Image (cartoon, rainbow, N blue to C red; front, side, top):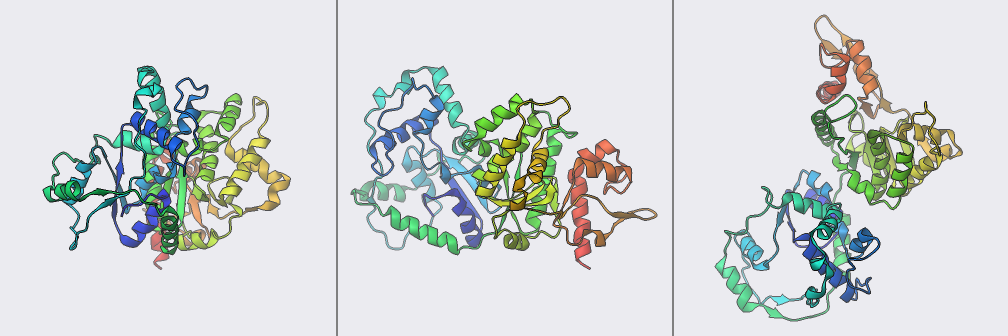
Length: 457
């Protein structure tokens, strides 16, 4: 399959066809940027530039972004699709990749002349592009801007790694001969509109699973009673548990949040209020959900009980903002517009100045929204379990299954872990309160196993 389309369309295709390997062409970033700039100037379909790239632009980031197009063709979220593996390769010269694929793909039984339909105009201004004479420091600034984007970030990580396709040893002489001897160049009108319509129709007919999002942006050295490694272990346990209930999972990051037009405004406000790094990240996830197109999100210490993929798909048909742990934003579903509306309500309710004893977090901001006149347009409920119910036996614990009915999920919060450890009903035996918080991943997976045993009876 070779298709230029939105990244979200690959997952439903993989769902229908099975495991898939995607090959992402990764060019040298500056050369790729200049090529896009030229294309944006000269292609009538995409034209939005009336000048060459300006190294003296007042807003360099805006100048770089004015050249970019089709940023939605790749997302790092594809890396978390269990049916998709993403590889990278150097597309220049093209023949290397043609030869590589010639050793893999079955040849056609009936071969015809290949007719090239170039979609580009020869770039004739390379010598006049200012970026090549602007100095290494300037070039690095441009690269740093590009590395904020999923495509360039992935390419930077992938090139030279085990996921970088080795094209050096692949030679298919018959393929090479075919490509050099039979290619005929012929420019003819493209049929983009028909292709887009076909792809759209195909993707709509493919089955899709609901996606449970979470947000994770590590704090160097860890935080909140857990090391960075323990946070990553909890994230892995979260992913495994939701996927076991039939969900697709997607991990959003700061990069997703930064795509929102109001990210800078929100971040400036939070910094002025001296909000710490962890709590600022909690606000970022709201913007990330807007950019993700809305849907479900849970904290990565929230684990599924009755909320299967089938139930989630049914409950998600309505885009109304639904908070399932009341004002604690541990499990929420809403449309993109609703996510955007509520985060702006929260922003509007932030104080201009922080009092010494004021706690500011997205949880308290959502609490303020719940007190406002906007409450009637949000569905508030208590369907997330906030306690652990084990019965202590002579030498073991047994889960009290009756206490878990009609609950969508359980929130392994700091408070829950500390309280359970103090009462000696934590899934892990003989742990201190601090150890209970740090080892939430292990405890959650044990409880998930016990809960599945409840369902078996």
